[in-house]
Length: 246
Image (cartoon, rainbow, N blue to C red; front, side):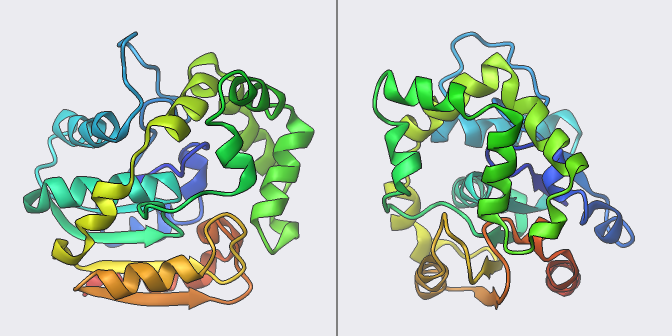
C-alpha cells in the first residue's frame, strides 16, 4: 500500500494512518517531487500531470513494488487516480480523499496562483508559520487537532525553494480534463471518502466522482474538512481498513 503525501504538505499528512494500516499491510508513505522532504534532482522537472504520474511509477520501481493499493488526498488523490488510469495493471485499489481530478475551477486563492508574478508572491507570503496555522485551521473542522507540533511539521517543508516553486507551477500546469474524461472507464475499485465541510473541494465533487466512476464506494464524513485523515482520523481509519481488507 502506498500513501501519497497530500499536495502541499508531507508524509505527516498520514501520521494517524501509518501504524493502523501497517498492522495488516506493508505500507509506504511517499513525498512526490516538490512535496515534503523529497529533493528534485532534475532541474527540468516539468511539474505537470505526466511528470507526477511518472514519479509515482518511479517510486514503485525504486522500492520493488509491482502492484499496490494507492491512497491520496487533495492533489495526491488526483495523481493516484491518474496513475491508476494509465497503469491499471499496477493498482489494486484506490482511495480518493477529497481529491482533485475533476476539470473544475479551484478556490479564489488557488486560482490566483495561476497568474504570473501574483502566484509567485502569494506562495512566498504563505510560508510564514502563522499563515500555515491559519491554512490548517481553515481546512479542518476540529481545530483542536491543529497542534503546535502539527503546524511545525506542516510548515517546515513549505519553506523549501523547490516546494515553493512547485506549488505555483503545479497549479498552472495540472490539467484534469483528461482525468475526468477517463473516469467512466476507470475500473479500479475506488473508495471516494470526503469531508462534508471541505472548503477547498466542495462535497458536491464527491458525488460527481461517484456518478462517473463505475466501481466505487462513496463515504461522506460529517464534521470533517479537506484533510479528513488529519481532521477525523478514527472514522477515516475504519473506512480505509475495511476497504483495503475487502
